Length: 217
Image (cartoon, rainbow, N blue to C red; front, side, top):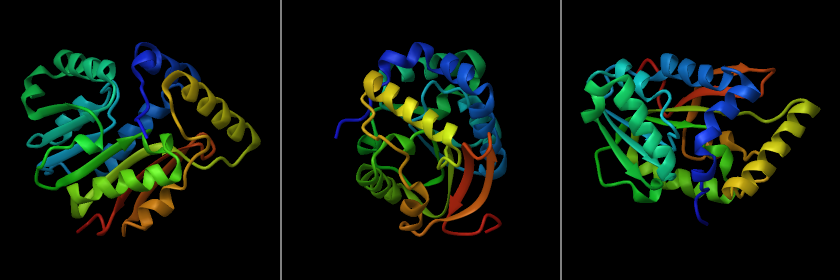
């Protein structure tokens, strides 16, 4: 199944997110970086990074890390490059930008941290399982999976908002999912455990750190 195409929404994706959610989505990403990103990480895989709003924060927190930044949208990737040049040009040499998906990952040593923000919710359960299966060989048992995403809806208004978002991005970007997949079960099947979690907006938005090993390992 082809990856969703966010080129058509890249110009207004961040403003739209701020209009609907304020700074909540950005705060979720910042919170999980603070909670789970090891400053000593040597290799970071950022999959589906979008416009790169938090990429400079990743580089500041991990001053010795090499970051592999993978994004399927050419326009999103262009914006991420521009944002990094503007915000932290001295760290640009530590980032390898890849236009593509997890299927285009080059051979490399396993990463110490894997970042996926508002990505896994885009895929129906079978496609999500396949995506995770392709990502897993790029990690090791101590890798921390840092996730920020939407959580299963608890209220009627949350279910309505989910349905509206899936309909919009289905039409605008070819998102195939029509409801939130069971991300937790898919991660458990890889042997990962949730080690840290924080929720916002009555449980609508979740940030979590997953790993095979405890975080103090």
